[in-house]
Image 1 (cartoon, rainbow over the protein chains, first blue to last red):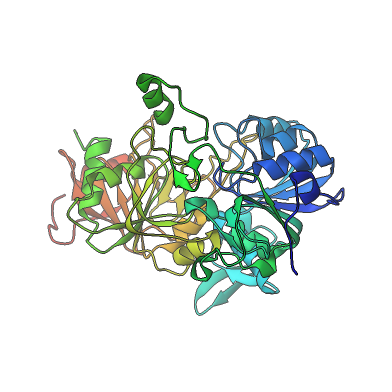
Image 2: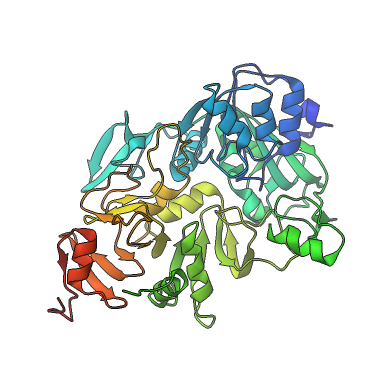
Length: 254
Length: 219
């Protein structure tokens, strides 16, 4: 019997070594595997290279990992945000190395790693500062840059539901990097809101087949979902709205 | 020289987007264009974090943190919407499947080079996101911008001095003063607003401009 489920997040991140390259799913806060990141902070691995679209929001998740001094290098497309103060401080202090990658090249480089592609030519970034040091080639009259795959030792991914074989479905735009990161890492660790019986997921809707997944841990529904039904009542950061109608409006508009 | 306000410009751009178009509206001012797309036309909005068929912001209390746009603001999904992962989303873009992309700009050159991701200031924290992918991906790239900076310098230039986002990628430039087509041999004035003429626009930009195709001789 195949059972990739683990009992808790500590077990899920066990064995991640110092110096690892760790992919972390999510676009901003949507799909960010916050419970797994918290477990990684607790686990203690350091000198990490993080691959993620952003470099942390507020003081939680990736930002907390950075603040703990566990990260040597960040590979991402968009570190600077209104709430990226942890990254901003460490980067300005010279304590973090940054590899800035256009978002589509980042996604395709991750996809290429999982798909066994040696390298590929992309038109994105031609003639810009981010083309420096890259091989350029003209194919059928169009200019391209040679881009190499990004592989990882570990991927931390958040999905909506999963089963013990590691089949996953996502919710809305929280899917973002989940399927491609799952395939690009040696060990893929997934947190799901709900673990379901084998056969309960519609095979037509599985976005990440279990072949790409090594460990699955259930962390429970998030505040805006009640037993699989969207109930709202939160702001875009997932924080509960105040009870009075006036403050609800203010919270949602922020 | 009263031209169009930001909102009027958004309406003007919306009027050039036909039914059936797949459209990406960049972060910032271009998102205003969505407010002016006619309700009775089926125009499909793409957001590069993984959604086609993006709808307006949700009602207060119905914000869903899993359903956001590329600017990380809460949105809704219209009937007929589809979700997909990031590599598929940028493949759609890079593969030339999007019809129109509307982007902001720091500078655009008369060859259609775009600079919109970095001012190149030393010490600034860089962030590129999907800007470079968008610039080279869509069949038509519309730029929405003011013609002049706050200091009165033209944002339409002979050569960009800010770091480039893409080379010869812009199709058309919409400003509150005029609309310009990138022809491959300089810029052609497509439409003027307020009391502008080709001559007054040449004075503001310092560039030689071609007169509108069908209304030649307006200078």
